Length: 239
Image (cartoon, rainbow, N blue to C red):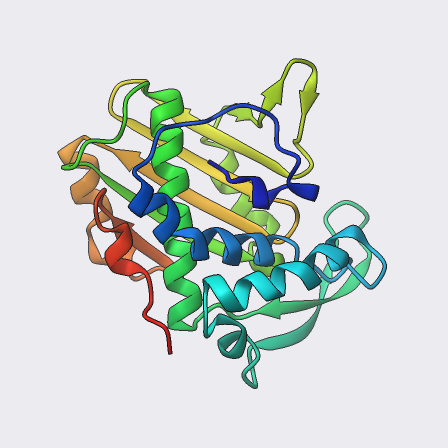
């Protein structure tokens, strides 16, 4: 985790590889495909870019692995053009905000976020998240995360990581800032390409789990708390 499909040409360094049961690994494949599609959606990825080329192939997989998501995303009002100021140059740029309020899309991205949170727990705490533990995740699409919100979240995440294999890294495709006590909790803000951001927590501490079960956290847009063992039950049924 993250899966190979999240990387350009499925070329993934060897790192963060964990055992998983076949039912969960295969049963949540749709979440991986949805995340791979969303990660490549960005206003700058026009015809001729490698992202646009891979999207054409991924759309076929999307229909197979996550039926109904493409139709949900294509409904009127789901894409809104807006002008935003680029933080690097100060110039104004037209972007297309994708509103991820459809139940199928939200379910798949929540599953993907929970899997990422559990993987980061295994990576930085050193053990699998126990069955009485929990994850909390929130996702934002392409231009949906403002620079101010990103800065505020990153400020409490001192660690930086990506996948590394020798001198090779893929920080332009996947990177995350994180914080952990290395015993009971890990928190992270992860970015995939330029299209998908995830804020995730994974913890076995009842106090932290109780905190994220509060209404003010669960009421945040595109957020959810998920416990290990619940993933397959969250997969949407075919339309």
